[in-house]
Image 1 (cartoon, helix red, strand yellow):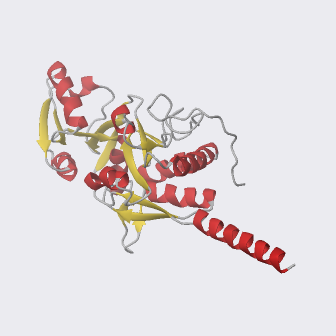
Image 2 (spheres, one colour; image 1 turned 90 degrees about the vertical axis):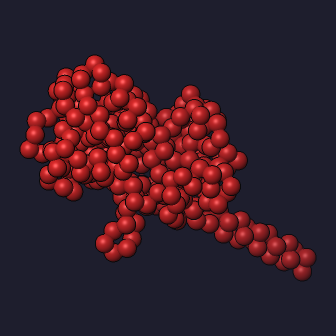
Image 3 (cartoon, one colour; image 1 turned 135 degrees about the vertical axis):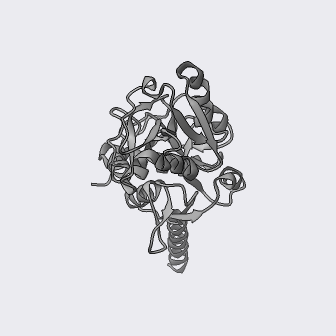
Length: 280
């Protein structure tokens, strides 16, 4: 009988340890200061699209996502070095990145358009920018895109070191528009009545995704499944609209559930089917 009690006690202890390990927080690195995804509020707490999604994921999974601040340049190296468990930031999913890190399925559409002066005309197509001045961040993807389009439309491209400087150029009338993610243009317009987002936007079917270490498919899959639940409940789209004032792309990644785990067609995508097991 004593032996039986010892065995049962040991089994209970092991189960207790396993349960405790299972409930360990998921430590997530966010580039806090990149609005509207993660910023510091007046109360000193983190807020933004990714912070709201992290809270919703935590509730759905029953596991806390603990957010820490990391500069963007340190996120991928830090993830690979296992300094934290996931990157909670709008990393654009690319095949090159997916070779070295695991992505969950996309959670947002990486569309981009223009930030405009609220008193000026709308931009419904690039034809509306003929002969105009467009501001951009120096050397980023928006710079490369608008620079390629500029000769066709006689656009003058103004390049700035900071995203905020490009927006300031629009506010001062130095530029007619600034090219950026539509989420950023929507948030700036929501926060500052001097701005408005363009009706025009570019959709290259590129998506934002959360990233994980290559050998941590378990955490990737857990978060991926929870994301699917939030999509089916409309939570992701509601969060984006709350922060940007813009409706999500119809049929876009805020509402589309991807089969399996990860972004379909990318390296390390796992096509294994799984049923949705969502909290009520």
